[in-house]
Length: 146
Figure 1 (spheres, rainbow, N blue to C red):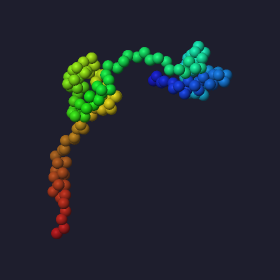
Figure 2 (tube, rainbow, N blue to C red):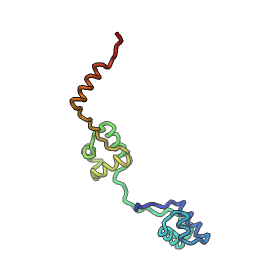
Figure 3 (tube, rainbow, N blue to C red):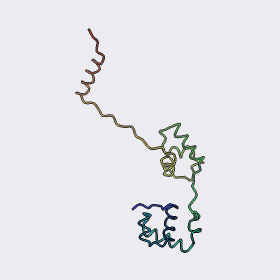
Figure 4 (tube, rainbow, N blue to C red):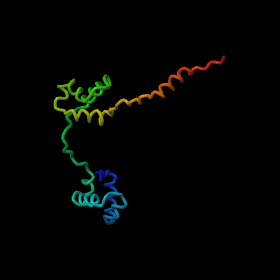
């Protein structure tokens, strides 16, 4: 199952229903939040209190290796030359993308900048009969009244 996040509004709804004296399965069904998540939220509410439970928790994630300036430069390069690969972009800006992998450059292009990878459609080859028909059609393309 995919992991889903519970919004702060859902948190408030769970807390108000819990304060109103409803049991956990009822709260889970009413808010459409999983039972185990509801249990965790109620435990958190009991430990911290209402004000602290809704406060934003500190984030301890790793900082990004690229900045907004880097994204703008990559975007300009791709706008100038749309056929550039991620490897070529990394090689053109070695100082800027020194500690960034090629896969990260691909992710920046695809997820952050919205540049999707495209491949030209293959044109089907014409058979001899189709070529003959095209020749006939071109011959009689313009009809003239006599």
